[in-house]
Length: 241
Image 1 (cartoon, rainbow, N blue to C red):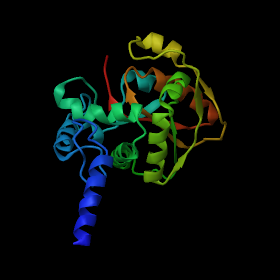
Image 2: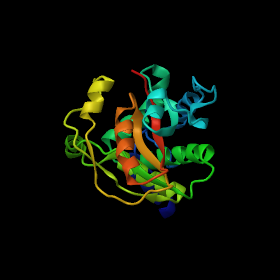
Image 3: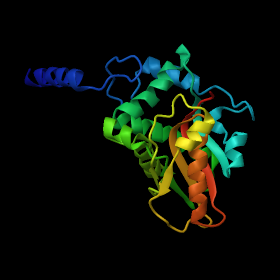
Protein backbone atom coordinates (compact mmCIF):
# COMPACT_ATOMS: atom_id res chain seq x y z
CA UNK A 1 0.00 0.00 0.00
CA UNK A 2 2.86 2.36 0.84
CA UNK A 3 4.41 1.74 -2.60
CA UNK A 4 1.05 2.47 -4.23
CA UNK A 5 0.80 5.88 -2.57
CA UNK A 6 4.43 6.61 -3.45
CA UNK A 7 3.64 5.97 -7.11
CA UNK A 8 0.57 8.20 -6.89
CA UNK A 9 2.62 10.96 -5.26
CA UNK A 10 5.31 10.56 -7.91
CA UNK A 11 2.75 10.79 -10.72
CA UNK A 12 1.15 13.90 -9.19
CA UNK A 13 4.55 15.55 -8.78
CA UNK A 14 5.43 14.68 -12.37
CA UNK A 15 2.13 16.07 -13.67
CA UNK A 16 2.68 19.48 -12.07
CA UNK A 17 6.39 19.72 -12.90
CA UNK A 18 6.51 18.11 -16.33
CA UNK A 19 7.22 20.37 -19.30
CA UNK A 20 4.46 20.94 -21.80
CA UNK A 21 4.56 20.13 -25.50
CA UNK A 22 6.08 23.12 -27.28
CA UNK A 23 3.24 23.06 -29.80
CA UNK A 24 -0.09 22.07 -28.20
CA UNK A 25 0.97 22.66 -24.57
CA UNK A 26 -0.28 19.28 -23.39
CA UNK A 27 1.78 17.61 -20.61
CA UNK A 28 4.52 15.42 -22.03
CA UNK A 29 5.13 11.74 -21.44
CA UNK A 30 8.31 10.75 -19.65
CA UNK A 31 10.16 10.34 -22.93
CA UNK A 32 12.43 13.36 -22.97
CA UNK A 33 11.04 14.81 -26.22
CA UNK A 34 9.74 18.40 -26.43
CA UNK A 35 6.72 17.36 -28.51
CA UNK A 36 3.80 15.10 -27.63
CA UNK A 37 3.17 12.05 -29.81
CA UNK A 38 0.67 13.73 -32.13
CA UNK A 39 2.74 16.88 -32.56
CA UNK A 40 5.86 14.80 -33.14
CA UNK A 41 4.02 13.03 -35.96
CA UNK A 42 3.15 16.44 -37.42
CA UNK A 43 6.79 17.48 -37.12
CA UNK A 44 8.01 14.38 -38.98
CA UNK A 45 5.56 15.12 -41.80
CA UNK A 46 7.16 18.56 -42.12
CA UNK A 47 10.48 16.82 -42.78
CA UNK A 48 9.07 15.23 -45.94
CA UNK A 49 9.22 18.51 -47.87
CA UNK A 50 11.68 18.43 -50.74
CA UNK A 51 14.52 20.71 -51.78
CA UNK A 52 13.55 22.83 -54.78
CA UNK A 53 17.07 22.42 -56.21
CA UNK A 54 17.89 18.70 -55.93
CA UNK A 55 14.49 17.15 -55.17
CA UNK A 56 15.63 15.31 -52.04
CA UNK A 57 14.27 15.82 -48.54
CA UNK A 58 15.67 19.04 -47.12
CA UNK A 59 17.43 17.23 -44.27
CA UNK A 60 19.12 14.95 -46.80
CA UNK A 61 20.61 17.71 -48.93
CA UNK A 62 23.20 20.41 -48.43
CA UNK A 63 22.11 22.68 -51.27
CA UNK A 64 22.87 26.35 -50.67
CA UNK A 65 21.19 29.22 -52.47
CA UNK A 66 23.12 31.37 -54.91
CA UNK A 67 23.53 34.18 -52.39
CA UNK A 68 25.20 31.92 -49.82
CA UNK A 69 27.41 30.30 -52.44
CA UNK A 70 28.48 33.70 -53.75
CA UNK A 71 29.77 34.48 -50.24
CA UNK A 72 31.97 31.42 -49.93
CA UNK A 73 29.52 29.06 -48.21
CA UNK A 74 29.89 25.54 -49.62
CA UNK A 75 26.56 24.16 -48.45
CA UNK A 76 23.54 24.64 -46.22
CA UNK A 77 22.43 21.82 -43.93
CA UNK A 78 18.89 22.24 -42.56
CA UNK A 79 15.89 20.26 -41.32
CA UNK A 80 12.77 21.89 -42.73
CA UNK A 81 11.34 24.95 -44.46
CA UNK A 82 9.88 27.54 -42.12
CA UNK A 83 6.47 28.95 -42.99
CA UNK A 84 3.34 30.02 -41.14
CA UNK A 85 0.99 27.33 -42.39
CA UNK A 86 -0.93 25.36 -39.76
CA UNK A 87 0.75 22.08 -40.74
CA UNK A 88 4.09 23.65 -39.82
CA UNK A 89 2.99 24.64 -36.31
CA UNK A 90 4.70 21.77 -34.47
CA UNK A 91 8.00 22.30 -36.28
CA UNK A 92 7.85 26.07 -35.85
CA UNK A 93 7.16 25.69 -32.13
CA UNK A 94 10.59 24.12 -31.70
CA UNK A 95 12.17 27.31 -33.02
CA UNK A 96 9.99 29.58 -30.88
CA UNK A 97 10.87 27.53 -27.80
CA UNK A 98 14.59 27.62 -28.61
CA UNK A 99 14.47 31.41 -28.91
CA UNK A 100 12.40 32.17 -25.82
CA UNK A 101 13.08 29.42 -23.29
CA UNK A 102 16.11 27.52 -22.08
CA UNK A 103 14.48 24.09 -22.23
CA UNK A 104 17.21 21.49 -22.40
CA UNK A 105 14.94 18.86 -23.94
CA UNK A 106 14.20 21.15 -26.88
CA UNK A 107 17.84 22.08 -27.45
CA UNK A 108 19.00 18.47 -27.21
CA UNK A 109 16.26 17.27 -29.57
CA UNK A 110 17.16 19.81 -32.24
CA UNK A 111 20.87 19.07 -31.80
CA UNK A 112 20.21 15.37 -32.29
CA UNK A 113 18.17 16.00 -35.44
CA UNK A 114 20.83 18.31 -36.86
CA UNK A 115 23.59 15.82 -36.00
CA UNK A 116 21.88 13.20 -38.17
CA UNK A 117 21.65 15.69 -41.05
CA UNK A 118 25.29 16.74 -40.68
CA UNK A 119 26.51 13.13 -40.60
CA UNK A 120 24.48 12.30 -43.69
CA UNK A 121 25.75 15.27 -45.68
CA UNK A 122 29.34 15.35 -44.42
CA UNK A 123 30.79 11.88 -44.15
CA UNK A 124 34.08 13.14 -42.69
CA UNK A 125 33.69 15.56 -39.78
CA UNK A 126 36.93 14.87 -37.92
CA UNK A 127 38.42 18.07 -39.36
CA UNK A 128 35.36 20.18 -38.55
CA UNK A 129 34.70 22.76 -35.86
CA UNK A 130 31.47 24.48 -34.89
CA UNK A 131 30.65 28.09 -34.18
CA UNK A 132 27.39 30.05 -34.12
CA UNK A 133 25.74 33.26 -35.25
CA UNK A 134 25.77 35.40 -32.08
CA UNK A 135 22.52 36.78 -30.72
CA UNK A 136 21.98 40.52 -30.45
CA UNK A 137 23.05 41.91 -27.05
CA UNK A 138 19.54 43.32 -26.57
CA UNK A 139 17.97 39.90 -27.11
CA UNK A 140 20.41 38.28 -24.69
CA UNK A 141 19.46 40.85 -22.06
CA UNK A 142 15.77 40.13 -22.70
CA UNK A 143 15.91 36.33 -22.66
CA UNK A 144 19.07 35.70 -20.68
CA UNK A 145 20.83 33.39 -23.13
CA UNK A 146 22.11 32.96 -26.69
CA UNK A 147 19.92 30.29 -28.26
CA UNK A 148 22.16 29.64 -31.28
CA UNK A 149 25.18 29.16 -29.04
CA UNK A 150 23.27 26.70 -26.85
CA UNK A 151 22.24 24.76 -29.94
CA UNK A 152 25.75 24.83 -31.42
CA UNK A 153 27.33 23.59 -28.19
CA UNK A 154 24.82 20.75 -27.96
CA UNK A 155 25.46 19.86 -31.61
CA UNK A 156 29.22 19.84 -30.99
CA UNK A 157 28.69 17.32 -28.19
CA UNK A 158 26.51 15.15 -30.44
CA UNK A 159 29.16 15.15 -33.17
CA UNK A 160 32.17 14.91 -30.85
CA UNK A 161 33.87 17.97 -32.32
CA UNK A 162 34.98 21.31 -30.91
CA UNK A 163 32.80 24.36 -30.43
CA UNK A 164 34.70 27.64 -30.82
CA UNK A 165 33.01 30.99 -30.06
CA UNK A 166 34.38 33.12 -32.89
CA UNK A 167 32.00 36.05 -33.25
CA UNK A 168 30.43 38.86 -31.26
CA UNK A 169 27.35 40.74 -32.44
CA UNK A 170 27.10 44.49 -32.64
CA UNK A 171 23.62 44.41 -34.20
CA UNK A 172 21.35 47.08 -32.79
CA UNK A 173 17.97 46.11 -34.20
CA UNK A 174 15.87 43.00 -34.72
CA UNK A 175 16.15 41.81 -38.32
CA UNK A 176 12.76 40.14 -38.70
CA UNK A 177 11.15 42.70 -41.02
CA UNK A 178 14.29 43.98 -42.76
CA UNK A 179 15.21 43.55 -46.40
CA UNK A 180 18.37 41.61 -47.25
CA UNK A 181 20.27 44.85 -47.83
CA UNK A 182 19.22 46.22 -44.44
CA UNK A 183 20.04 42.90 -42.77
CA UNK A 184 23.56 43.00 -44.18
CA UNK A 185 24.00 46.52 -42.81
CA UNK A 186 22.67 45.42 -39.42
CA UNK A 187 24.72 42.19 -39.24
CA UNK A 188 27.74 43.68 -37.50
CA UNK A 189 30.12 40.97 -36.26
CA UNK A 190 33.60 41.16 -34.77
CA UNK A 191 35.98 38.27 -34.23
CA UNK A 192 36.45 37.31 -30.59
CA UNK A 193 39.18 34.74 -31.29
CA UNK A 194 41.76 34.21 -34.01
CA UNK A 195 42.63 30.50 -34.22
CA UNK A 196 44.32 29.21 -37.35
CA UNK A 197 41.52 27.42 -39.19
CA UNK A 198 43.57 26.57 -42.28
CA UNK A 199 42.17 23.46 -43.94
CA UNK A 200 39.25 23.20 -41.51
CA UNK A 201 35.56 22.68 -42.15
CA UNK A 202 33.61 25.28 -40.17
CA UNK A 203 29.93 24.74 -39.36
CA UNK A 204 28.12 28.01 -38.59
CA UNK A 205 24.93 27.34 -36.61
CA UNK A 206 21.78 29.46 -36.44
CA UNK A 207 18.11 28.73 -35.86
CA UNK A 208 16.71 30.04 -39.16
CA UNK A 209 18.36 31.25 -42.35
CA UNK A 210 16.10 33.74 -44.13
CA UNK A 211 17.99 36.10 -46.44
CA UNK A 212 21.43 34.66 -45.69
CA UNK A 213 22.74 38.06 -44.63
CA UNK A 214 24.03 37.02 -41.20
CA UNK A 215 25.59 33.84 -42.56
CA UNK A 216 27.33 35.68 -45.39
CA UNK A 217 28.80 38.35 -43.11
CA UNK A 218 29.90 35.72 -40.58
CA UNK A 219 31.51 33.62 -43.31
CA UNK A 220 33.47 36.63 -44.54
CA UNK A 221 34.92 37.17 -41.07
CA UNK A 222 35.78 33.50 -40.58
CA UNK A 223 37.47 33.25 -43.98
CA UNK A 224 40.18 35.61 -42.68
CA UNK A 225 41.29 32.99 -40.13
CA UNK A 226 43.20 30.79 -42.54
CA UNK A 227 43.45 29.32 -46.01
CA UNK A 228 41.32 26.62 -47.63
CA UNK A 229 38.55 27.01 -45.04
CA UNK A 230 35.34 25.26 -46.08
CA UNK A 231 32.21 26.76 -44.55
CA UNK A 232 28.77 25.19 -44.14
CA UNK A 233 25.67 26.93 -42.85
CA UNK A 234 23.73 24.75 -40.41
CA UNK A 235 20.22 25.76 -39.34
CA UNK A 236 17.05 24.24 -38.01
CA UNK A 237 15.03 25.85 -40.78
CA UNK A 238 15.24 27.66 -44.09
CA UNK A 239 12.84 30.54 -44.71
CA UNK A 240 12.16 32.63 -47.77
CA UNK A 241 10.91 36.21 -47.63
